[in-house]
Length: 189
Image (tube, rainbow, N blue to C red; front, side):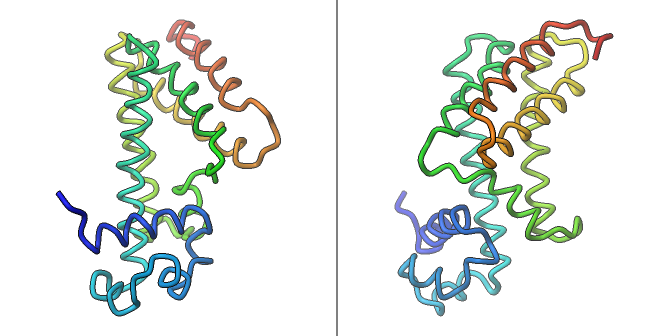
């Protein structure tokens, strides 16, 4: 199916917002870089915030689809897939286009927890944690929900440290911690 003008706009805007942030990406920049007129943009989205929400939804689909897909490629069992998350993150961190977490950017720019953009970003982390919980259940872990929250914390921390650039191996360090979590008894957690 051929992408619509709206789909094209959301995809291009997602890249611009990811690279520059949301507040720094004004309508003039969006017009210049997407090649789509303001009239056309406003035909599809009545506000810039609506466009941001659409880009966050698309980014969520892309990043979770890529991450869980890569985890399946790198690990043959659910336990191996949970550990492989950090190998996949290491690959992402080494990409020249890596600019951190788009959802963390969204929550830092829209800090009110009730703001729709903040809620959309928080929902991404919830969905990610739900996916990790499912894998932890499949792996037979005794407390999958707690483990999923802990792995999410390690993942998010690794992304932040990779963004800051103050350590050379945040994904590998987080991986080592995940291996410990997956091998210790539930009572120790």
